[in-house]
Image 1 (cartoon, protein in one colour):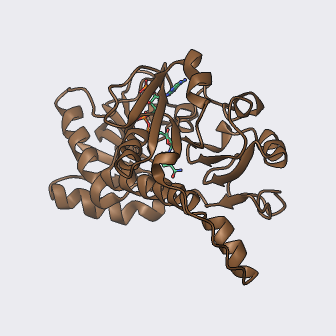
Image 2 (spheres, helix red, strand yellow):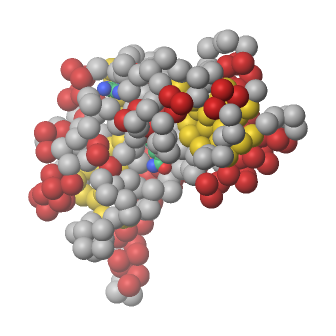
Amino acid sequence: MAILYAAEPEDAAGWQQSLLALDAGLEIRHWPDWGKAEEIDFVIVGGKSPGDLSVFPNLRAIQSTWAGVNHLLRSDGLPADVPIARMVDRGLTGSMAEFVVYHVLDELRDGPALRAAQAERNWLMAIPRQAAGLTVGILGLGTLGSDIAAKLAGLGFKVRGWSRSPKEAGPGITSFAGADSLPAFCTGTDILVCLLPLTAETENILDAKLFALLGDGTVLINAGRGAHLNEDDLLAALKTGRIGRAVLDVFRTEPLPEGHPFWRHPQVTISPHVAAITRAGTGAEDIYANFRRAMAGQNLLNQVDRDKGY
Ligand code: NAP
């Protein structure tokens, strides 16, 4: 009964230590030194698989250390009948909330304008807006989106969320569900946050068609995936003022190429895909729980629906 660690090699020591702290009896091997293939029951991968996982005849589960599994699901040699779990980690969820709340508050309190004014020694005495005057729309009201929605609603923002299925949203949060509700969701949204998984349905969702549903000066925060965004459409929308400012943590090509126009764009804030990362210290608990579940033949926590793609 062995676990094969096949995620990012630089994180291997941290995961091993955190898992052994939960159960000192675990046998953890490391890709590509798995020993006898038939002894591997459980594989831990990162954003994608490093190789063919169909070589393990007794594999019971594949656990990703990433929340988004879009790359993993496209990996070669992914056995069709082995369940896959994605990462839900309270450390990651908390970090994403900090990232989004920080940028929403920066917008509320005129951060960009104040920083520009300071550079000119300009005493810009604009009366700050209040949270209740701003509507934050979150595309994706799942694990991350719903946590952020509750935190922003707690600060007094008007919050709305969009998902595939309707949600029982908490106080101060309005739930919109399905493609037909997208225009209503966009109307009146001042700050648009994308926290969708990347699937065939959501790829390129942040495009000219969607921007046309928003009001002038809308702030875009994309922390989902780079391929959610049509970059040319964003550049055009920044030019017309439809999008006032964009905070981007994820990009089609990462690292963002040196010559990319986003780097020097005055209305774009770049963050190098660090909005939220999984922490071994907290994430190991769910991985260990899934290992035990897989060994007992039970359903996994946070099991991926391969048909839906998330
Ligand atoms: P999740 O719990 O699976 O939530 C996804 C949400 O998106 C759900 O509410 C789902 O609706 C909704 N959704 C999916 N497809 C949709 C569609 N076609 N139309 C409308 N709504 C749709 O995922 P999560 O844990 O919150 O993570 C979301 C994404 O964040 C990840 O997939 C990843 O790409 C990204 N992420 C980024 C970072 C970073 O550092 N930048 C870190 C972690 C995660 P239902 O609830 O109705 O299914």
